[in-house]
Length: 297
Image (cartoon, rainbow, N blue to C red; front, side):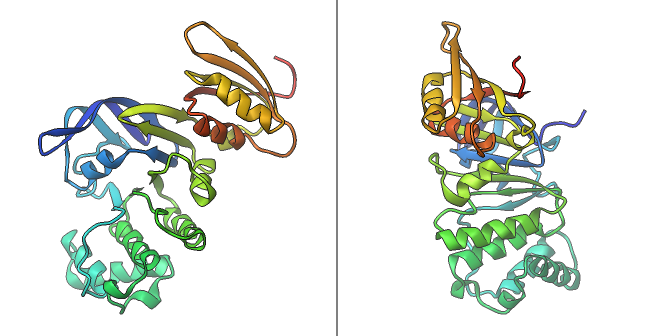
């Protein structure tokens, strides 16, 4: 059985002796997982700036600690320190050399990564002269060095204009190809292209104040019918109201513990993604989302 792409098991992540994350249990499967909210601890761990002091964190079956150095994960950090006087190709070539490649081979790998993303025009430009979008594009090429099977991308759309977000989204598609993708967004109220990260994900995890408040499964595979059984661990009424306001039919039953079971019948042309978006907006953690087809069940 293939292990989930991302697994936290009673995980505690510390930096400088202080906990960044503690006691988290969560997992997400599929080639494309979106992380909403406060996942900075995971990226600090991948960057070697934090460590697991209890439990475990695994990515594609490997310990997240050392996953970048071992070539399992290619990492893009939202705002890393950069040698701004260096040219883009020079930066990538030197980075490839740090992975153990001879300089000539490193330069070839750097050029290949830039070509894959259509960034050849940036090769001889200094990093300090690049726009935020261009700089982040180079960082995405950096994540591709060594051809890792997983890309972990921290807030790749943050602080970009709508037009720039569209361009970055296209670059993410080019980068993914045969790879698995972990993409984060620090914004809880995801809209526009950040919302598209959720719509296209195989799974979405939502983290607030160290607590998992949302876990939405593979919504884009649940498109056979128009009726779904949805289980939310809290705020089920708010989720039902949000769907009803959009014209969908919802029946709600609660078991007295706060867990809500909804029978949702979608009306019109909206896909099942409307349920995942409504769940995020209502802060209603969904633990079950099952298609029932069109016949009564």
